[in-house]
Image 1: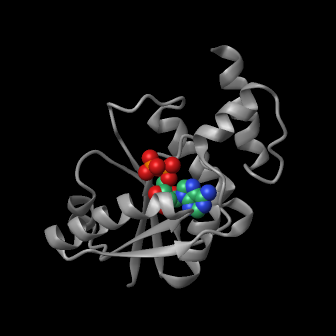
Image 2 (image 1 turned 60 degrees about the horizontal axis):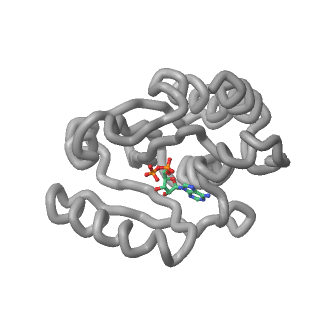
Length: 159
Ligand code: ADP
């Protein structure tokens, strides 16, 4: 079985993430979306909430499942027999960091990283930008799923 992992924070998932996940799901037998637990990074949604939202918006893809991980991504890959990490590249600014990570992951465990060029529709999209726009009631239609928009608006109203 050809398996790949799409790692990230997904706080919350955007259409940019979904574009990469859906394209990966057509290339691999199974795609695992792994929500990486990073205790030093302040997040708006809990891990369970992020998993729940990802599960909902990826349910139409039959071969995508959601998981979580705390630790080195290469250890996750080893434990789950996943030889490939799939990442989206938005801009040159993503490249330097991603290249370093890809080279280190390859050195540590022989895990390959495949980069997908971002759909130009979403190249300027990030979870943090979505939070900022929704906070001030800006228009995010077409950039995040409606369900995520509702959850985001509700959470931002609470805070
Ligand atoms: P991180 O905390 O690693 O930045 P994110 O959840 O923001 O996690 O993103 C996870 C991964 O999803 C990124 O490394 C990138 O590969 C991909 N990604 C994020 N935003 C986009 C986008 N707009 N278009 C394509 N890929 C994206």
